[in-house]
Image (cartoon, rainbow, N blue to C red; front, top):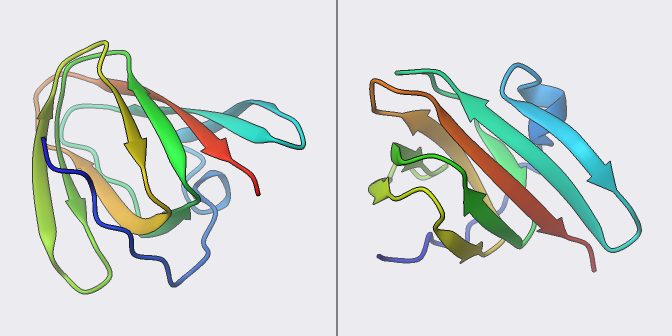
Length: 108
């Protein structure tokens, strides 16, 4: 699977701009752990993540749209763990089932 492209510009916190999909589970001076939940066919708004580790709790058929308009589609199996560079993106659930992801955002 291709790694998502690093792209950061806006600095928009997903918990602030999309609280329907993102919730802080815990946070300390080293990490912030988010839970992201998307219903079938739901999408977010453009937001920013620092470098992160994503743990997919469910299968996911999703699309990332980047600030420059480019799109990447992904089919990810439950249990997959992947590193993500810092980026701005707009995630979208392309599937007919909910998606749940744990994001461990790294603080520097």
